[in-house]
Image 1: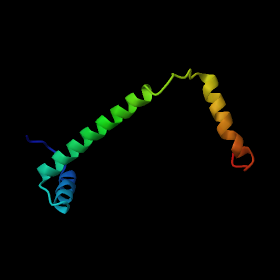
Image 2 (image 1 turned 90 degrees about the vertical axis):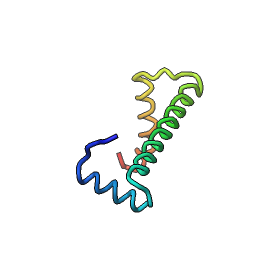
Image 3 (image 1 turned 180 degrees about the vertical axis):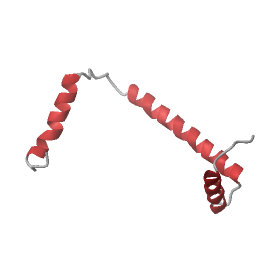
Image 4 (image 1 turned 180 degrees about the horizontal axis):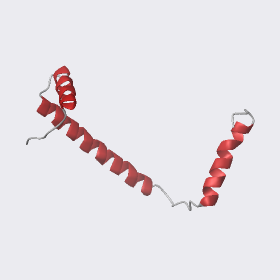
Amino acid sequence: MSIMISPDLEARLRAQAQAEGLSVEAYLERLVRVDERLDEELTGAALEALNSGEPLDVGAGYWEEKHRRLDEPLKDTGSR
């Protein structure tokens, strides 16, 4: 496969690959595999969160209460 990239990016890729003792091709392949693994982890974490319990009714009142509870400790410090 052949791709076109800017000379600056090519220089960075070559330098990084060389620093890690890899060919540019091997370095790029590793980056793609890491990206795939991170995508799988993110998808797994999202699914786990979705299935973690009962859903919350998140409306305006929910966020107002959250802000009130977060702002309360700041009132004593004068930070807000």
